[in-house]
Structure formats: C-alpha cells, structure tokens
Image 1 (cartoon, rainbow, N blue to C red):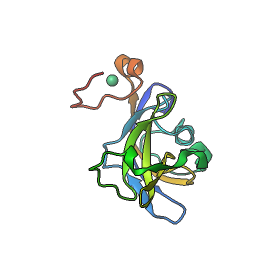
Image 2: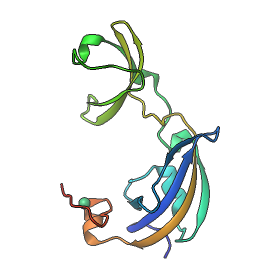
Image 3: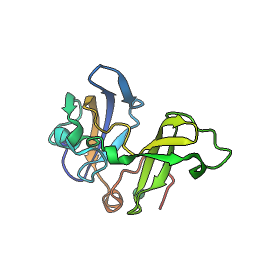
Image 4: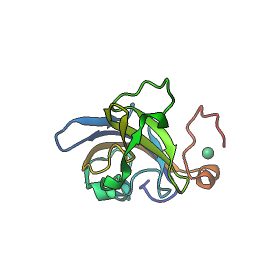
Length: 161
Ligand code: ZN
C-alpha cells in the first residue's frame, strides 16, 4: 500500500541538523501519523507521498518547509515580574503562552539579565535545515473516526476530546 491521503503511516525517524547532531528520534514503532492532515511538517509529508512500508529514505528539508524561518519579532525582552515571583527561571526553559490571535505558542527563555528576561517565541527548530532518516514500518487505511478527528488513534489510547 502506498502512502496517500487518509492512510495511517507508522515510521521510525531520526532527525539531525546539518552538523549531524541528533535533535529528535522516535521510539521504535511508536510514531504514527495521518497522511494529508497536516500532522507533520509539509516537506516531510511531500517526501513520504507514494512511499510504501519497508522503504527507507533520507530527506533534507529546508527550514521554510519545516518549522519556518526564525522571526526576530518573536524575540522580546520582558520584565521579571511578568513571571510568578517564585518561578525558577533558567535559560532554555520553555513555557506555553497564547499568541494575540489565541494560538498556543511555546516560548523559550533565551537570556536573563537581572530583571530583564529575553523570551523567544520561535519554534526551537525554526530556521534549521532538517535531515530525517526514515524507515517506513506500516501503511494502513485510516478508520472513519481517525479521518473525522484528523489524527491517529493508537492502540491503548483512551482519549477523547
Ligand atoms: Zn481522535
């Protein structure tokens, strides 16, 4: 079966940057997504289209087709009192906030200078060219419920919202 819209794909991946540093890696057989539902970055979805179980591929995805370019406007300096007084702030710490249009965004503390905290709302992988090593393990039809929800239901998942 070839990968196409409304197929569920299980794959293993290793994500590295241009220096070969491993940024992320799936647990064997634990990663599945619904193709054609924007569950994964566009560049990866494009590369996987028409592939089949058993295929291995290496994909280089420029930042623009991954998590986008870094945007300096997403970097801001704020006052320490924007945070809870007892919060232990550290560089690299992440927290969640809402953008002005109500979208959830992950914010990273980029620098701390006394009471001035530099926060960065860019995705940690923004601006990075991504290399994926992929082994496709399984391709199956999505269930009607998965298609309706726009995501995969893994065995043992007890969700639902
Ligand atoms: Zn669901």
